[in-house]
Image 1: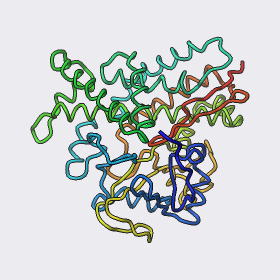
Image 2: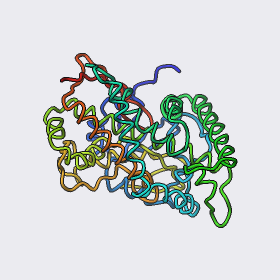
Image 3: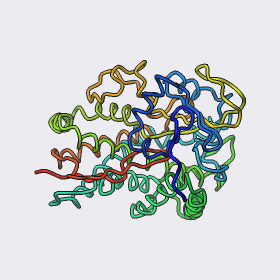
Image 4: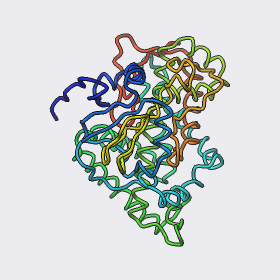
Length: 395
């Protein structure tokens, strides 16, 4: 692919793949919120970008004017299969979502915590004796990939394969559709094989569970199951490892917060809510069903809306000192897990993985900083988070 032309005007030519946006989007959002609360670009065949909480909330709840059938902004027309319930609209959405809920209750997530903690300790053991590491690749990415594999009843060693699919489908594939199609096809074949295996050897895992559920008395098709599993893999892994990684990035660059959390581990759950608010990783999309308007801005049918809940969470009209990270923020009704009918099913699981990952890391490495001359690489596309995070571990 050739180099992208830089965004010439954030209000009328924004590009969420522009390196300046990827590196630090928050000043851009702040300026747009002040001067052009609903930006637009002709890139990607037309996309709007609302920056205010009230507008983002209104879109998320308006399923009549905004469809979820295209959930990702990509180059070219979408040629990818649906991923229920993320890409489901009413009335199908309710049933598609309902069948998944029992596997993500607090009680179900609690059963995964012991293995999650063990995985964290195993990853930390591999870092024992080292003075430097990549906190993203060596730790943050290890946890969700292996927890997800365990949920699916698949070898935890499949985590490496999952990492590649995430990178190809959600990062490279945003600009290069052929790469995304290949990764999606590989995932489809992989999960189709897993479904066939569970029919012969069912177990206590998510794949076997989906074979048993019914919608309107009918079993799910193999295609429906494979597409849902693909969603859970991509969404569950990349958003959570991004949040673990960005939390470690924040602590590596804010000595006071790091020292306080190391001394007061009971504050970690509260700090996690603030990290979720301040560094919300996910940007989803909606397709405009018919001409409408939001925040006084007319929106054209068939164009897209980039719905970034991180922009909502940085709105000073809703959150005092919105651009400050306050790890003991008392009132924090953030929208990191979305708003409306598509609010993240896996929020309880993500919170548990974040909490355990930070508890174990800080118990082992209470003092760490970015390595001298470190280059932190951030992912672009649907989910933003550090993909390379060199840190020095101080004893």
